[in-house]
Image (cartoon, rainbow, N blue to C red):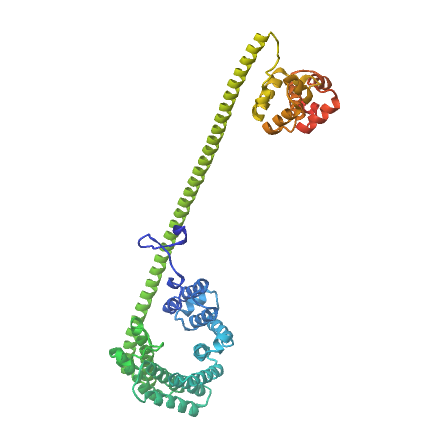
Amino acid sequence: MLSITGCTDGKQGMVQSRLPHDTLYTEQKAIAVYGYDPVRALQIVDSAVIVGNMSSWRADKNRARIYSLTRAGERLDSLMHWSPDARFDTARIIGEQLIRHDSIKNSLERQQDVLEILAYVARCQKDTTLWLRRSRQLVEVCRRQGAETEALRGEAEIGAALCYMGQESEGMAMMDRAIGALSDGELKFNELDALVIALKRKAGVMISKGQAAEVLPLARRIVNLLNDYEHHPDKYHDGTYREPPAARREEYIRFYRSQGENFIATAYAALGQSDDMYVTFERLENIVRDAETREHRARYDALEQQLKRQESEAHSRQMTIVAIAVVCLLLFALLFAAYVFAKNRIINMKNRGLVKLIDEAVRYKERYEQMHQSMLAHVESEGETVPHPVDLKSFSADALFQYLYDDIREKRLYLDPKFDRQAVCSRYGLTAVQVGNAFAQGSDYDSVADFVRDCRLEYACHLLTTTDMKVADAASASGFSRATTFNHDFKARYNLTPSEYRRR
């Protein structure tokens, strides 16, 4: 049973039990791969729900995040047979359902997570009005829980949305206020990340408005902040959920650095500074090439892990089949052994019973011969003729019945129609009580009449199958005085009429 219910380790071929919290199906595993393998991330989320590692609302939140934030959007749309960017519609639908869920409404932190997804989706779909509304809701939720840095991040989003809607003065003022507030004091990672986002939003607005000269200081500041973070990560460490782990730090820096360099290259192109533009494009090309290399490597690693996982699962299934086969063989062997044991026990019990009956028969025969010899000697000395022993009264019920049974059947006394209990009493010198006890206690018959009737019926069967006698003649020859009685008794015993019995 352990072999069947356990999980097989693909490396060592050992069968191990695995608890639900020790599986691969966790939120952390899904988030770790959703960027380049969203389909696998969705499978992990579905499996996490099945094994009980994730609630339904949290699974929906992760699905919305995977649909909206994956970098393999085109691949996901293709595998899902969706139209381009349909994943954003799916993420929005899930997010709008979640924001009304009780588990979300009762937690400001969870509301913040969902609103961030909805604001991001609205911005990607260029729905500026919805982007503005979700960003304002996000700022309100952040302020209510005292998350000022998150609120300033949201204000930068609001400022950018206002600028795109034509309210440039109000929007620029809001973005400048957010950038100034985030720049004050010592920067930790959360403030660094929010400042980079705010600078990106303002640079994007400047590019769209054709103000290329003002883009350069913003983009250079983004690059300088990332360079400083790359060389002094411990200085910015704050342990917040936004801070990437050490393994993904380079990916984070490369992602935002490429955007900063892209702003710089775009600004140089707009200003006509081709030399600087080419240098920037070269740096950007190196970043992109490195990013593609790392992404291909990550996908290769993911495929390799998937292959190993499939091999492990195949090996596990093989071991499970082997284990089931072994268990079935063991069960069959146990059942066969139990059957043989039971048959041997029954045979032994029958043998012991047979030995006991043989011993009793031998003792009865010896006793009977002794009594018969004694009677013969007595008869010879007295000069009398006695047909049967006179000492039958001393027999036990079993022994007396056996004697009567053998004598009546051997001499076929039952063929006499007048042979009944009284005839037995007279012939053997016994009382009616003694005869009744012999048959009631020493046999399976209820009375002498039942025994005599069975003997006559057996003899009638013999005559019907070995002679051409008529049924009535066979009945008379068997000791039945009336044919009707014979037919009734025969049908009751064999469930057939005498004629049917003869034909069969």
